[in-house]
Amino acid sequence: MAKLKSITKLNKWFDGINEPLIIAGPCSAESEEQIMQTAKEIAALGKIKVFRSGIWKPRTRPGNFEGVGEEGLQWLQNVKKETGLLTAIEVANPEHAELAIKYNVDILWIGARTTSNPFSIQELADYLKGYDKPLMVKNPINPDVSLWVGALERFHKAGINKLAAIHRGFYPFEATTLRNIPKWEVAIELKSMCHDLPIICDPSHIAGNTDFIGEISQKALDLNMDGLMIETHYNPTVALSDMNQQLTPKELDSLLDELIFRRTTTKDADFTSILETLRSKIDSIDQQMLELLSQRMNTVEEIGKYKSKNEVTILQLRRWENIMSTRLKLGKSLGLTEDFIKKLLQLVHKESIQRQTEVMNKMTSSAKKE
Image 1 (cartoon, rainbow, N blue to C red):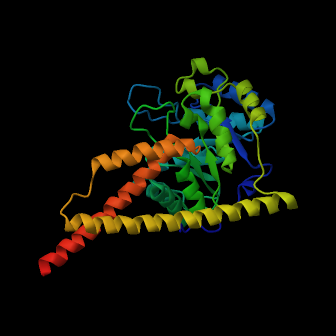
Image 2 (image 1 turned 90 degrees about the vertical axis):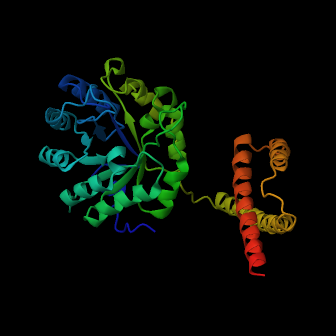
């Protein structure tokens, strides 16, 4: 269990902050005109309280636009003065944090690359000790929930209580439709470990393309995430970084209108009664499922003993192929997806091989002693 206690609730960060929190702004601060125009159009929507922008943009390879640096912080001060929007930026080292504090930035976030490096996180935590403004931590590049929690714990140990996580997806090792793989289960696991921790979704970085931002945003809200951070540029076609994943303020407005913001609970007695009945049914099915899996593994062990006595290999390829073929056919006829069936069978098969291996090793060891 993560040692994250006394986390300040999201709606206590600033006056007027509501849940879910919507953060919007360009990937990068490119010019004062671009920043101010985008901020004014976002503020005019009346739905956004926080304006985000990248000040330092370390790219995967050098030679691309890497941000305007300190000058951009002056532009953000003007944005706050003219629009009333709160400001948020990414910081990657103590020097960035020092400048952010100097220019009174309201919210800081830690990028995925920084989260992946405990040395960098500790340096920032030491510098920001006692920091009393909100700090958001993006997930690491790879789906390592312990690394994510560890970064949050380092900041919390430094006395930072206004903490949140940002789910921006994980780097794919193979080509995919999305820029980053969501792996929602990792964010759910984090929420299970840290109940009071707000989690904001960054659909722009998961999508990599505006075509998918709406779908991902709705999925995040349906999973009870506490907000969205959506990259927005007054004219994405001229953006110096990540143009394909930035919406215009008008597109952002349409997206927010289309999203369904569902409640986590209801006081409707009939709804609660029906839900509890269905959940009890699931509990019963889960118990039966686990009992059947236990029986299956007991049978697997008996097969392992029989194979060992007859000196037969554990893996029987034709049998495994037959299982996959027949179970896939049966599963699909029952309304289950092929991907789900495959993953389930592979997990069961992996455990079966492990059980048979243990049985055969024990029998071999006993035989040698005799």
